[in-house]
Image (cartoon, rainbow, N blue to C red; front, top):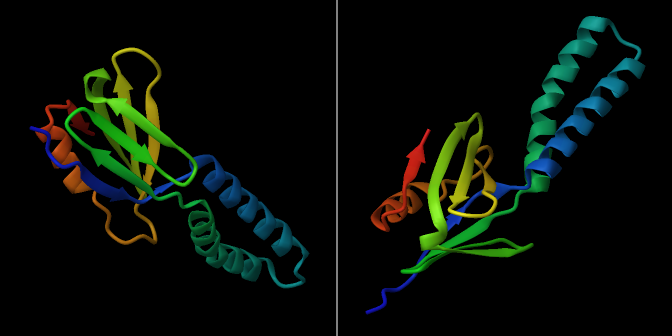
Amino acid sequence: MKSNPQTFHLSTLHRGKYMLILLTSILFIGMGMSKVPVQEILKIIIALLMVPLALYVAIKCSTLSSVWVLDDNTLQISNVKKTIVFPLNHISHIRNIKRSGGNLIIINQNKGPSFRTWRNKLFQKEDDLPLLTEALKAANIEYYDM
């Protein structure tokens, strides 16, 4: 008897786009502050106060929310750009590596390349990662929380 698929929503982001926007923003902040005719200490303070704004803009521009669907035989990961389906018997293990501001989730397959996705916790509402973790463990998938 087949069970209903479980659906989980994760706040993920496009890591390359995020890094490009963040580093470009910081570069422009530095270049802009070098042109402002005020004392150096004020330039430094203003630049430091603008870094959180650059972080916020980079996260908002690179957000790529994903939907994870787990059923009896497959794990499907979808976002607006693509959908990837992993048969459960092809998944060797899943690693969840905590990083500042989020997680790196790596799905290792028995054969073939591993799949990586970046979960974001900054400026986001709570997502379904704890529920997804429980469901993966209940499906007898090796899950390492590092």
